[in-house]
View 1: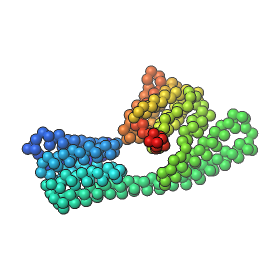
View 2 (view 1 turned 90 degrees about the vertical axis):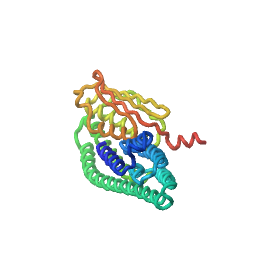
View 3 (view 1 turned 30 degrees about the vertical axis):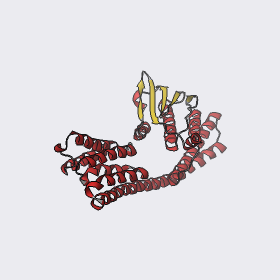
View 4 (view 1 turned 135 degrees about the vertical axis):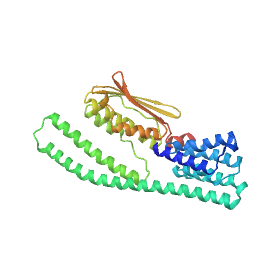
Length: 330
């Protein structure tokens, strides 16, 4: 949010210093200028929506007064943050058409199209570099975790085979071995996901089964409606991390209840468990990270103690899966 504030403040300063808006332009131009600049605060959360709003306001402002090139600076910043190529093309063409009557084909339309294209390409390059760094980090994580976990698994399996263990000890070792193998599988699949966008079966059932083995009492299995892959994975992470958090902070025997409320455009996930540990220990880095991800996609998040019950609530945009959309279209 701090970087968005800095970006918006800088764009506003450039906008005003260049005379893109002056008091002589009147109240309508002032309103359009605010609509051009204010949405920049939310570029990271909803880049496509922000680009659409800013483009409409910019085109109106360009047609209202004698256009200046700095009038479409907010569009350039929105283009930089937008991964949607189709939206970017529409925005660039709209701005180019709006400046044509006053500035002509070269100083107006051609310049606007070139600058808009450059802004989008710079953003695309930044996203590519971020993806490359993420893949390199995932590879290093896989190599390190694979070596360490392999040693742990071998030692655990050897101890199970030759050690004098009680049935309870063997059950604990089985849980350890299963968790280790599951961790390796998840890392490998995460690495594959960075390389290609393929549909994969959900792993939520396996995670919940392991947590049950470790002592979590789960009232039923949380059933999610059909969702597009990114939103489905986020919803599954909300459920899994909430379950892990409940077991970690309250220990075996904790009872966790999930309530899934699907809607036409929103999905509400609510989880409740009685707090056995101190309330301050109930929230950790995992939930804080989840809160950021949920808000980043335009959702809502809350987590806290309500009369001795820890309640986690996540509201997500309910985007239907491609298979479901295809079925409706048919």
